[in-house]
Each structure stands twice: as C-alpha cells, then as structure tokens.
Image (tube, rainbow, N blue to C red; front, top):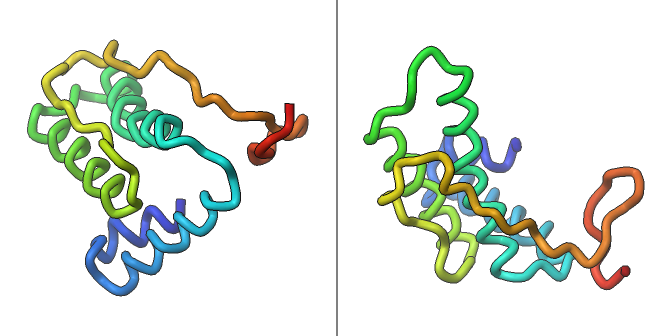
Amino acid sequence: MLLLDAVVEHGSGTPEGRTAIRRINQMHRNYDISDDDMRYVLSLFVVMPRRWIDTYGRRRLSRHEIVAATEYYRMLGRRMGIPSSPGSTRSSKPSSTPTRRPTWRGTSRLGGSPTPGST
C-alpha cells in the first residue's frame, strides 16, 4: 500500500511515482501472473471501494468520483504495462464486479503470496 500511496501523493510521472511503479512491477515479476489476473485485481481497486462506500458510507460516490477512480487505475495499469487495463465507466452499478477469480497456480497454506507453478 505504501507504494500505491507514493503514486497518489507524488504523481505517476514524478521520479518518486515512477520508482514506486517500477518497484511494484519488480515485485509482481517474481510470480507467473497472467495479464487477465492483473486486470482482475486492478479492477477490484475500482469496484470494491465503491461497493463498500455505497453500502456503509454516508453517501454514494458521485459520477465524477467514479470516473476519476476508474481513470486513475486505468492510468496505473498502463504505467504498469498491463495491456487492455480495465476502463469502462459505462456501468454505474456496483454489480459490475468482475466475477472471475485470479487463477493462482498455488498459494501458501498460511495465506502468503502465490507460489507460481505449484499445484
């Protein structure tokens, strides 16, 4: 989360933001993560906070806030080199949550990071 915060705080085009994105990519490169799985997780950053706010927040997000969040994560996906990053803001319903789960090859039994290639 600190790396994502650096991008928000400093901007993706600053040296600090580019360094954070480079480090995020370095960490993800250690695992065999498909582009589909990267897009899925990236889309959750857009959909899940909105769903939580719509359910428990004092107010629903405005259309402007929804578009801003979508555009931000679309830009982050491009900067991370994720092809065809999520981006449709047409559906304004939180039910547009991706229904597919990532296809990890295996995970640590202790809830740790995915372990590529394990079955």
